[in-house]
Length: 208
Image (cartoon, rainbow, N blue to C red; front, side, top):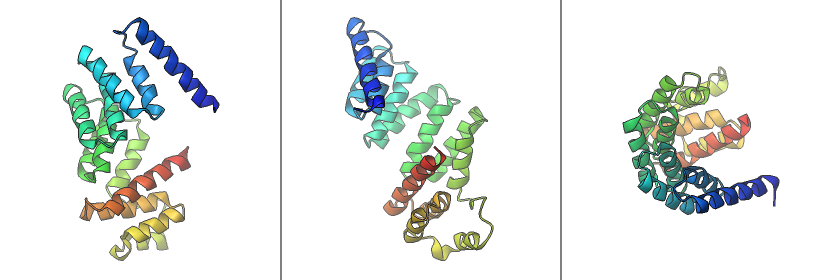
């Protein structure tokens, strides 16, 4: 077992033992997050709901619940939980970022932009949200000023196939630009939705 997996398993055991000793412990959120990160999404959801039944105002547990629901494919449920958080604390930057992610995955780019703008207002140092704003507004990548820039500006090349080609060439921002422009016209386009998420994941890997 890799070191990270061993450390995570040990942390899970510690938190499980802590909760067994004290079922009312706020460690419920930490354990749920460990479950979520280790792929045990359903366990994370059940644990968060147990904790929230006891402590309805426990915002950390609600945020983790939203993340776990999103990871399990329940975008509607995740957005409802984030909505509860933002109703109580609209300047919560992390909740705004998660709301932006949920909206983006649903193809609702205008809503995603609004949430990212709110995240940046709450956290002016959030460079990643600023970068995502440029992509979701379909602004051309700043580094492009030659032939590729002209290609990206041409509607002829705003197709899933061209976006996939950009991805194959390692042009993550350019691919995101193409897929975003498609979604601006056709929010329900499944190829564009999937392509945008793939481009953003590749972008994060490159930065990491």
